[in-house]
Amino acid sequence: MRHADRTRWTLRAAGAGCAALLALSGCASSDDSPSATPETSGSAAPAKLSGEVTVFAAASLKESFTTLGEEFEKVHPGTKVTFSFGGSDALAASITGGAPADVFAAASPRTMRIVTEAGSISGAPATFVRNQLEIATLPGNPERIDSLEDLTGPDLKVVLCDRTVPCGAAAQKALEAGDVELTPVSYEQDVKAALNKVVLNEADAAVVYKTDVKAAGDKVAGVEFPESAEAVNDYPIALLKDAPNAAAAKAFIALVQSDEGQKVLTGAGFLNP
Image (cartoon, rainbow, N blue to C red):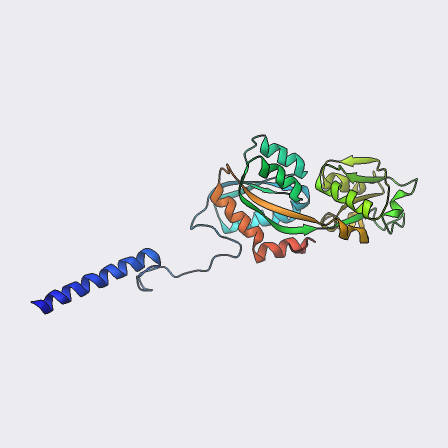
Protein backbone atom coordinates (compact mmCIF):
# COMPACT_ATOMS: atom_id res chain seq x y z
CA MET A 1 0.00 0.00 0.00
CA ARG A 2 2.81 2.35 0.78
CA HIS A 3 4.28 1.75 -2.66
CA ALA A 4 0.89 2.52 -4.33
CA ASP A 5 0.51 5.69 -2.26
CA ARG A 6 3.94 6.83 -3.33
CA THR A 7 3.04 6.14 -6.98
CA ARG A 8 -0.18 8.15 -6.72
CA TRP A 9 1.69 11.02 -5.02
CA THR A 10 4.34 11.05 -7.74
CA LEU A 11 1.71 11.22 -10.48
CA ARG A 12 -0.11 14.07 -8.71
CA ALA A 13 3.17 16.00 -8.34
CA ALA A 14 4.03 15.50 -12.01
CA GLY A 15 0.58 16.77 -13.01
CA ALA A 16 0.94 19.83 -10.82
CA GLY A 17 4.37 20.56 -12.29
CA CYS A 18 3.06 20.36 -15.82
CA ALA A 19 0.14 22.64 -14.91
CA ALA A 20 2.60 25.23 -13.60
CA LEU A 21 4.69 25.00 -16.74
CA LEU A 22 1.57 25.32 -18.86
CA ALA A 23 0.70 28.54 -17.06
CA LEU A 24 4.17 29.98 -17.71
CA SER A 25 5.25 28.71 -21.09
CA GLY A 26 3.07 25.87 -22.35
CA CYS A 27 3.64 22.25 -21.30
CA ALA A 28 1.78 20.59 -24.20
CA SER A 29 3.65 18.70 -26.86
CA SER A 30 4.29 20.21 -30.30
CA ASP A 31 1.40 18.13 -31.67
CA ASP A 32 -1.06 19.74 -29.23
CA SER A 33 0.00 23.39 -29.53
CA PRO A 34 0.28 25.82 -32.47
CA SER A 35 3.72 26.28 -33.94
CA ALA A 36 5.56 29.29 -32.52
CA THR A 37 6.00 32.05 -35.05
CA PRO A 38 8.38 34.97 -34.59
CA GLU A 39 6.90 38.41 -34.04
CA THR A 40 7.01 40.62 -37.08
CA SER A 41 9.89 43.09 -36.76
CA GLY A 42 8.80 46.21 -34.89
CA SER A 43 5.69 44.72 -33.30
CA ALA A 44 5.67 44.51 -29.55
CA ALA A 45 1.95 43.84 -29.75
CA PRO A 46 -0.23 41.39 -27.90
CA ALA A 47 -1.83 38.55 -29.89
CA LYS A 48 -4.55 40.78 -31.39
CA LEU A 49 -4.76 44.52 -31.85
CA SER A 50 -7.65 46.46 -33.30
CA GLY A 51 -9.11 49.92 -33.59
CA GLU A 52 -7.75 53.34 -34.47
CA VAL A 53 -4.37 54.68 -33.38
CA THR A 54 -4.09 58.48 -33.49
CA VAL A 55 -0.56 59.81 -33.90
CA PHE A 56 0.34 63.50 -33.59
CA ALA A 57 3.68 63.95 -35.36
CA ALA A 58 6.01 66.71 -36.53
CA ALA A 59 5.47 67.72 -40.16
CA SER A 60 8.94 66.51 -41.14
CA LEU A 61 7.90 62.95 -40.27
CA LYS A 62 5.05 62.87 -42.76
CA GLU A 63 6.56 60.65 -45.46
CA SER A 64 8.34 58.15 -43.21
CA PHE A 65 5.51 57.84 -40.66
CA THR A 66 2.94 57.38 -43.43
CA THR A 67 5.02 54.44 -44.69
CA LEU A 68 5.26 53.00 -41.17
CA GLY A 69 1.54 53.47 -40.63
CA GLU A 70 0.77 51.45 -43.74
CA GLU A 71 3.13 48.71 -42.58
CA PHE A 72 1.52 48.67 -39.14
CA GLU A 73 -1.94 48.19 -40.64
CA LYS A 74 -0.67 45.28 -42.74
CA VAL A 75 0.88 43.56 -39.74
CA HIS A 76 -2.20 44.20 -37.57
CA PRO A 77 -5.37 43.75 -39.68
CA GLY A 78 -8.26 45.55 -38.06
CA THR A 79 -6.18 48.56 -37.01
CA LYS A 80 -6.07 52.01 -38.60
CA VAL A 81 -3.35 54.60 -38.02
CA THR A 82 -4.58 58.19 -38.29
CA PHE A 83 -2.00 60.96 -38.41
CA SER A 84 -2.12 64.64 -37.57
CA PHE A 85 1.04 66.29 -38.94
CA GLY A 86 2.04 69.87 -38.17
CA GLY A 87 4.30 72.17 -36.24
CA SER A 88 5.34 70.48 -33.00
CA ASP A 89 4.31 73.45 -30.87
CA ALA A 90 0.82 73.55 -32.37
CA LEU A 91 0.44 69.81 -31.83
CA ALA A 92 1.64 70.13 -28.22
CA ALA A 93 -0.92 72.87 -27.62
CA SER A 94 -3.68 70.66 -29.03
CA ILE A 95 -2.67 67.77 -26.76
CA THR A 96 -2.51 69.89 -23.62
CA GLY A 97 -5.82 71.40 -24.67
CA GLY A 98 -7.46 67.98 -24.52
CA ALA A 99 -7.32 66.73 -28.11
CA PRO A 100 -7.64 62.92 -28.07
CA ALA A 101 -4.50 61.16 -29.30
CA ASP A 102 -2.42 58.08 -28.56
CA VAL A 103 1.12 59.00 -29.58
CA PHE A 104 3.12 62.22 -29.82
CA ALA A 105 6.31 62.44 -31.90
CA ALA A 106 7.93 65.86 -31.65
CA ALA A 107 10.80 67.49 -33.54
CA SER A 108 12.54 68.69 -30.40
CA PRO A 109 12.82 67.88 -26.68
CA ARG A 110 11.59 71.40 -25.87
CA THR A 111 8.20 70.81 -27.45
CA MET A 112 7.93 67.39 -25.84
CA ARG A 113 8.53 69.05 -22.46
CA ILE A 114 5.42 71.17 -23.00
CA VAL A 115 3.33 68.01 -23.01
CA THR A 116 5.36 66.27 -20.29
CA GLU A 117 5.10 69.18 -17.88
CA ALA A 118 1.34 69.29 -18.45
CA GLY A 119 1.14 65.70 -17.19
CA SER A 120 -0.06 64.37 -20.54
CA ILE A 121 2.65 61.73 -21.04
CA SER A 122 2.65 58.12 -19.87
CA GLY A 123 6.21 57.09 -19.04
CA ALA A 124 9.37 58.77 -20.31
CA PRO A 125 9.76 60.03 -23.90
CA ALA A 126 12.47 58.34 -25.97
CA THR A 127 14.61 59.88 -28.71
CA PHE A 128 14.12 57.81 -31.88
CA VAL A 129 15.88 59.90 -34.59
CA ARG A 130 17.76 63.15 -35.13
CA ASN A 131 17.54 65.67 -37.97
CA GLN A 132 19.85 68.25 -39.51
CA LEU A 133 19.22 71.42 -41.49
CA GLU A 134 19.86 72.09 -45.15
CA ILE A 135 19.18 75.00 -47.49
CA ALA A 136 16.50 74.26 -50.07
CA THR A 137 16.87 76.24 -53.30
CA LEU A 138 15.08 76.33 -56.63
CA PRO A 139 15.98 73.39 -58.90
CA GLY A 140 19.48 73.77 -60.28
CA ASN A 141 20.29 76.40 -57.62
CA PRO A 142 20.10 79.32 -60.10
CA GLU A 143 21.15 81.87 -57.47
CA ARG A 144 24.37 79.90 -56.77
CA ILE A 145 23.73 79.71 -53.05
CA ASP A 146 26.61 77.94 -51.32
CA SER A 147 26.39 79.09 -47.69
CA LEU A 148 24.26 80.73 -45.03
CA GLU A 149 26.04 84.00 -45.76
CA ASP A 150 24.80 83.85 -49.34
CA LEU A 151 21.22 84.00 -48.05
CA THR A 152 21.76 87.63 -47.01
CA GLY A 153 21.87 88.81 -50.65
CA PRO A 154 19.61 91.87 -51.02
CA ASP A 155 17.55 90.48 -53.89
CA LEU A 156 17.02 87.00 -52.45
CA LYS A 157 13.66 85.91 -51.09
CA VAL A 158 14.39 83.57 -48.17
CA VAL A 159 11.88 81.77 -45.94
CA LEU A 160 12.40 80.41 -42.43
CA CYS A 161 10.24 78.40 -40.06
CA ASP A 162 8.75 80.43 -37.23
CA ARG A 163 11.12 80.67 -34.26
CA THR A 164 8.59 78.98 -32.00
CA VAL A 165 8.73 75.70 -33.95
CA PRO A 166 11.72 73.32 -33.87
CA CYS A 167 12.96 73.93 -37.43
CA GLY A 168 12.86 77.69 -36.82
CA ALA A 169 14.65 77.42 -33.48
CA ALA A 170 17.31 75.24 -35.11
CA ALA A 171 17.73 77.74 -37.96
CA GLN A 172 18.29 80.55 -35.45
CA LYS A 173 20.97 78.46 -33.72
CA ALA A 174 22.72 77.86 -37.02
CA LEU A 175 22.56 81.55 -37.97
CA GLU A 176 24.02 82.52 -34.61
CA ALA A 177 26.77 79.90 -35.00
CA GLY A 178 27.69 81.43 -38.36
CA ASP A 179 27.27 85.03 -37.11
CA VAL A 180 24.79 85.60 -39.90
CA GLU A 181 21.91 88.10 -39.68
CA LEU A 182 19.03 87.26 -41.95
CA THR A 183 15.67 88.90 -42.52
CA PRO A 184 13.33 86.42 -44.24
CA VAL A 185 10.37 87.42 -46.38
CA SER A 186 8.19 85.20 -44.20
CA TYR A 187 8.15 82.91 -41.19
CA GLU A 188 6.15 79.70 -41.69
CA GLN A 189 4.34 77.60 -39.08
CA ASP A 190 5.97 74.29 -40.04
CA VAL A 191 8.81 73.00 -42.18
CA LYS A 192 6.57 71.77 -45.01
CA ALA A 193 5.04 75.22 -45.40
CA ALA A 194 8.53 76.78 -45.58
CA LEU A 195 9.68 74.26 -48.19
CA ASN A 196 6.50 74.73 -50.20
CA LYS A 197 7.34 78.40 -50.76
CA VAL A 198 10.39 77.27 -52.74
CA VAL A 199 8.51 74.47 -54.52
CA LEU A 200 5.92 77.03 -55.69
CA ASN A 201 8.68 79.46 -56.75
CA GLU A 202 7.47 82.00 -54.18
CA ALA A 203 10.91 82.06 -52.56
CA ASP A 204 14.48 81.54 -53.70
CA ALA A 205 15.51 79.51 -50.67
CA ALA A 206 14.38 78.14 -47.32
CA VAL A 207 16.23 76.71 -44.34
CA VAL A 208 14.58 73.35 -43.71
CA TYR A 209 15.52 69.79 -42.74
CA LYS A 210 17.57 67.48 -44.95
CA THR A 211 14.70 65.01 -44.83
CA ASP A 212 12.33 67.52 -46.39
CA VAL A 213 14.77 68.37 -49.17
CA LYS A 214 15.12 64.65 -49.90
CA ALA A 215 11.36 64.08 -49.84
CA ALA A 216 10.84 66.90 -52.36
CA GLY A 217 12.99 65.13 -54.95
CA ASP A 218 13.78 67.21 -58.03
CA LYS A 219 11.37 69.98 -57.00
CA VAL A 220 14.22 71.62 -55.07
CA ALA A 221 18.01 71.44 -54.74
CA GLY A 222 19.79 71.01 -51.41
CA VAL A 223 22.80 72.92 -50.10
CA GLU A 224 24.62 71.68 -47.02
CA PHE A 225 26.29 74.15 -44.67
CA PRO A 226 28.68 73.52 -41.76
CA GLU A 227 26.73 75.51 -39.17
CA SER A 228 23.94 72.92 -39.34
CA ALA A 229 26.09 70.67 -37.13
CA GLU A 230 25.46 73.16 -34.30
CA ALA A 231 21.69 72.78 -34.58
CA VAL A 232 20.85 69.08 -34.84
CA ASN A 233 17.41 68.29 -33.40
CA ASP A 234 16.58 65.19 -31.35
CA TYR A 235 13.11 63.75 -32.03
CA PRO A 236 11.35 62.22 -28.99
CA ILE A 237 8.29 59.97 -29.08
CA ALA A 238 5.92 59.14 -26.23
CA LEU A 239 2.71 57.35 -25.31
CA LEU A 240 0.08 59.83 -24.17
CA LYS A 241 -1.42 59.41 -20.73
CA ASP A 242 -5.07 59.20 -21.77
CA ALA A 243 -4.42 57.26 -24.98
CA PRO A 244 -7.74 55.78 -26.19
CA ASN A 245 -5.90 52.78 -27.69
CA ALA A 246 -2.82 52.34 -25.50
CA ALA A 247 -2.05 48.77 -26.57
CA ALA A 248 -1.90 49.62 -30.27
CA ALA A 249 -0.07 52.86 -29.49
CA LYS A 250 2.70 50.96 -27.69
CA ALA A 251 2.99 48.62 -30.67
CA PHE A 252 3.30 51.56 -33.08
CA ILE A 253 6.04 53.13 -30.94
CA ALA A 254 7.82 49.75 -30.90
CA LEU A 255 7.67 49.67 -34.72
CA VAL A 256 9.18 53.16 -34.94
CA GLN A 257 12.04 52.10 -32.65
CA SER A 258 12.59 48.72 -34.30
CA ASP A 259 15.29 47.91 -36.87
CA GLU A 260 12.61 47.99 -39.57
CA GLY A 261 11.36 51.39 -38.43
CA GLN A 262 14.87 52.81 -38.20
CA LYS A 263 15.61 51.59 -41.73
CA VAL A 264 12.63 53.54 -43.07
CA LEU A 265 13.60 56.66 -41.10
CA THR A 266 17.29 56.67 -42.02
CA GLY A 267 16.29 55.97 -45.62
CA ALA A 268 14.32 59.22 -45.46
CA GLY A 269 17.45 61.08 -44.34
CA PHE A 270 17.07 61.03 -40.57
CA LEU A 271 20.09 60.37 -38.36
CA ASN A 272 20.29 57.57 -35.83
CA PRO A 273 19.50 58.67 -32.27
